[in-house]
Length: 248
Length: 282
Image (cartoon, rainbow over all chains, first blue to last red; front, side, top):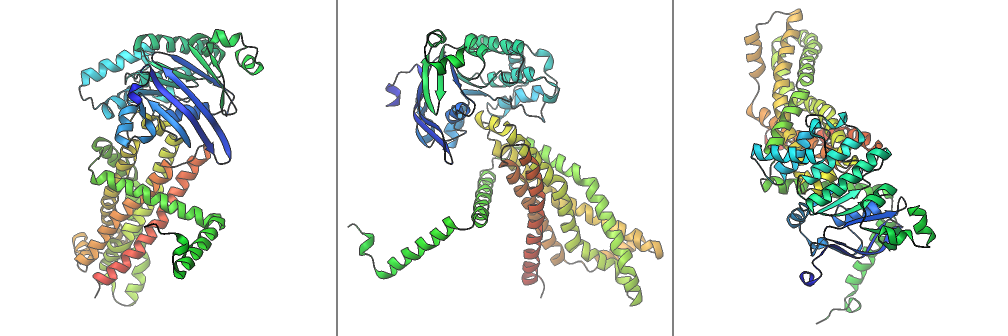
């Protein structure tokens, strides 16, 4: 059945619900992500944005509803199938989640050696150099994560995501904690990466810069539901106060 | 044929009633006991996952060797110092009593048996739990809190295999090796202790120390050393891997890794003594 659905939808969620104890975080979330699209999800803190993208990679399991990634229902996959699917998805964590005990080079080599099982030293080196040049941090190759600034950590985190050539990239608040200039640089980087890798992206954010610079479509969450959906220009014209409070 | 609950006999009905009563008691019962049961269940599942990974021979060899070096090297000096002091103190404390009974010549044998059978494995394991167990708990706890484990998970890198299997196997292998070191250094300490007030030859002292040692003394000690190592590895990895969010939980993971590992060491030791008593001591 799923194969007959619109193939340009790389992610499709249907009626996702998720609660933590008595607190219902996601009530009924249905949306789709199309190929090469940059979907920005906005919402108040605690509105379940991060929970939503964690459900997409099955870091969390929804209480009910359906999530299809590349046409496969991720809740029904076994561990091997899930890992195969995850290889096609990149996830940039809010904290970048660099491995503290490894240098930048080792951080980047890790998924190649461990997941892709690449042993060829030359190939690994060329991949590492390529992604580092994509994030403009060639000089940081031998540094440890503790020696990097917040913006550099985000870039290296992004480089580690890109090294797997993902078809979907999920960004969890990519500019949080960064100054406005670095924030714009990260946004430009997201755009450049999307052009180069032709990947689809979901970007969770509060940042106006991210919305303006990167989004091809916007979703605004409120009380566990999708409150508004559209392009930045469309939603900017909306008379809804809640939407205005986010976009102005 | 359908079987309706109402049509079943009185015994079944009584069983159902008691089951409901028990489940009600459990559900409404004390949180502490239910959380303890949950923790035991979680720990059992964690260990089962680990056993499955090992028996499927999915061992991350590179990381395993690195961990062996790290955990072994990290605790070697401390274990040797402790072993030396243990042998020295044991000898100094026991010597006057043995001299009083004219049994000074039994001193090396007594120290040898004490160290090899009991003190070497237990003290080494306790030191190892304090030094390495807390380190593993804190390291994995910190990785959990900073989403590094999640980052491995979403990239398909199988963090359980990479982080847990390697560390548990390294602990299991390293504790017995450290015990051997501790025993040897302990006997050396004992020799020095014996020579403070006496005059003993090194070769003679060691041959007297090993004279009463039987296979039935060595085998249980070696087996329980492996079990101590496995217990420390499993408990520490479990506490770190399932640390809850927040920086406080890192400290808590490290702390509970040491406390629970130490408790496990004593429980395993008590069981090992019983088994040894049944199978080896006539």
